[in-house]
Amino acid sequence: MGQDGEDRQGRDGLTRPEVCPTPFEAELRRDRRFEHRLLLKEALVLLVIALLVAARVLLVR
Amino acid sequence: MTALLAHGGLGLLTLIVMAGAIPLLAAFWQFALIGAHGVRNHLGAVADFTPRTAIVVPAWNEGAVVGATVERLLAMDYPREALRVYVVDDASTDATPQVLQAKQREHPGCVFHVRRDRGGEGKAHTLNHGLRTILADDWCEALLIIDADVLFEDDTLRKLARHLADPHVGAVTAYIKEGSQPANYLARFIGFEYITAQAAARRAQNVLGAMACLAGGAQLHSRTSLEAIGGRIDTTSLAEDTFTTFMTQREGRRAVFDGNAVVWAEEPADIVGLWKQRLRWARGNVQVTKRYRWLWFRRDRDRYLGGFSFGVFWFAIFLMPVFMIGASASLVTLFFVDFPLSWMLFHVLWITNAATYLFVTLFSFAIDPQTARRTWREGLLFPGVVALMIIVATCVPPLFDRWVPDLLRALGLPAGHAVARAATLFVYVWLSTSMLVAWAGKLLETRGRWKMLSPLFVYLAGYGPLLCAITLASYVYEARGAEMKWDKTEKTGKVAMA
Image 1 (cartoon, rainbow over the protein chains, first blue to last red):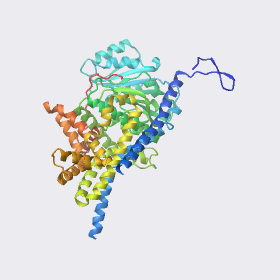
Image 2 (cartoon, each protein chain N blue to C red):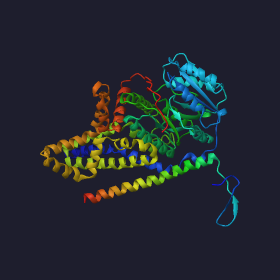
Image 3 (spheres, rainbow over the protein chains, first blue to last red):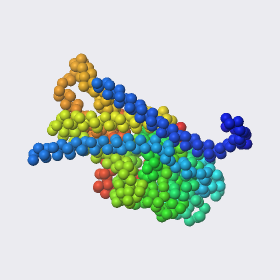
């Protein structure tokens, strides 16, 4: 992350000023990212449970 | 006719057993909603907003901790000119007045000592005394109600205040974490419980748009919202926080939870203290349930609080002892009447229990890994050692069907039909008897040298059944019309941020 006013070159070769997030915005981004990740974590936990259920079915057979 | 009655009876017993799965399915559904919080939260509507905030601290004999509390509040990352601390001293008899007068001199215009000469009426009365003083002046735009012993992280107030930029929000609450140092077994159980009951459940409530309760230790109200509900806290019940939350939402404003705003609190260190605190909360919930009886499951009366999911979550907790006792009693009846049916229902119930346990426990660890690192043992043992063994037995049938009996026979111990029947009856009634064992743990705590056995009983019976036993006790107290006494939870000032 650059400082205020620092330039950044994109893939298209154009140079545009990089806007540094304010501390408020940076904190908000972190918090929103944390909330987004909960969805992924939930999916992972459900996957683990599904695997355990599958293992149980195989074991009973 | 007799056959029809018999079928009807079996059907009814089957229904009652399966009703035992309602709290489990409700917990599963509640946790499933949390994923949706990733996209359906209030963070999209916040702004960099720091309203002039009056912090209200009710204090009674907090001389040992209140000075440090004031200093920490003033040191928070929040514009100093937008912060005032009002400590409402509920006729303390210790050094609280002297400590506060010194702080008032040290921080003129920032710290205020509001003294009540006659106290002991409870937290709500104390808060109202402070609110009258604060609202008489037009300085404050928001009011933060806290407990004297809680520790706010530097950014907590700022994170709460950002939600008030949305005028539709009336109140915001934080994630209270158990912070006793050192943490005994009970503190670790509470630490894990708060992941499930706050970090998880309140996110789900955010998704539904209906909040059950703003945490008493950290609730930020906009002035407009607090004035709309009368500028005071309800004093007619033992659940002033829940009533305030419901009233805020009934006035058409949202109550929001921010799980990233963290507050540390010291919770009871023994079962007797926990019982006292939770009995008050549970009795308060009985009062709320009765007072709002016209609202439950009635979306036409309140779109959010009257929603189906919110009602199911509320009653799954409120009626949990009824579900547990009903399921146990029906299983035992079916044991004598139709054993194969009872065995099948028992398996369905406990496999549901196993799936919910895994989902709730693993997801709770993922929601708050920091707390999970300290409380993982208590998280795993939350339903109790015996319940865990039943879960394992249900999920791995050969273990108790073949392997354990073979082992018993090899050791020369009885493993015949009678033992199997006794074991079956034992596991059928465990949903109910676990509450009795947990209650016995509380009784042992006051029995001198037997006290050391008390944690063993909680680990065996489970912390969940202990809370269930308290809910059951709350029915009895409310049915008897017991006195509404606000017992203050003893605090020792041993809370620290992890």
